[in-house]
Amino acid sequence: MIPLLLVVAVMFVALLAVFANEVRKRNMAIWLRSFFRQDWRGQPAQGVTKHLMFCFVDHYEPKWETPSYETECARVARWSRDYPKLCEGRRDADGRAPVHTFFYPEEEYRTEHLDALVDLCRKGLGEIEIHLHHNDDTEAGLREKLSRFTEMLAAKHDALPRNPKTGQPQWSFIHGNWALDNAHPSGDNCGINNELIILREEGCYADFTLPAAPDPCQTSTINKIYYATDDPLQPKSHDTGERVRVGGKPVGDLMIIQGPLGFMRGNRKFGVVPRIENADVRTSSPPTTDRVDAWVETGIHVEGKPEWVFVKVHTHGTQERDMDTLLGEPMRRAFEHLEQRYNDGREWKLHYVSARETYNIVKAAEEGLEGDPGSYRDHVIPRPQYAQR
Image (cartoon, rainbow, N blue to C red):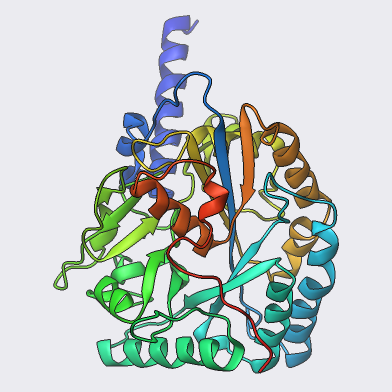
């Protein structure tokens, strides 16, 4: 008869092997040490009202998997029709409806698709920012793409604000395939080691790409808002950086605003290995109340101001398999939970914010400004007017 101790030891070794395999396959070794440190956390003062900034960013790709033109239009039309319905009756502490940030790909531009999104923006339900997929690119090629596309969005659609001194469009960014600053170990999906510098010089004020897990482009820095300094001779310069802090000063090249990364509660592969919580919202990972609470509890904040909590989640909004989740009851229930649990006016106040507004509120915290963060939505970067052209 096999001794019980030996059976337990064999089971333990087998479980350890399963866990090690998952760590390897899911690239968790990149960020596990940071997760166990939990060094991003902060404790709000007793009795202070906490403010929750909820930001939903979208890798919005009407041409996903190169469909027919009719399918592209149907995807955009679904958002135009159903997103206003989803937002009916939903309000935050400022009386604002949810606002969806559409990071639109440069390589997928169509006038009619942008016009449809601009119409949602005029209703106060969205804002438009920059998304880009590129591979084996050059500095000249990247600058041309960014300058041409951002100027088109500003001049033709009035969808980006301009720097009042230079007239240059101002915008935030999500990198296609997560490969910001040539971050993929293979060098695929970018090719530019000085991308952070180029982004800043072309008008970008913040990056919203992360988290990227389980992709190998994920950084070792997690659950933080920080400044990254580009080393133009090396890839993935944003792997580490200096946290944005109250009373601090801008440093480096680009602010990195991350969404929550960790592990899902009670959701384990093989009943053993916790699944990654990477703030991705889709049908296979719906925005349940438990997930919403976990996002909030992660507590991403500007160092020195833990009572202002930033939750940035992301999706790929034009994929048919996910639209019923994003535009239907699962997302409606998530909004209801946010408003019921995090908007009582005493313990919590809720603020639905765009990517631009998120950046502005971060800058207000950095400057040590007090009061209601909702009053700083347009603090540094103004809202586009979305005027008729």
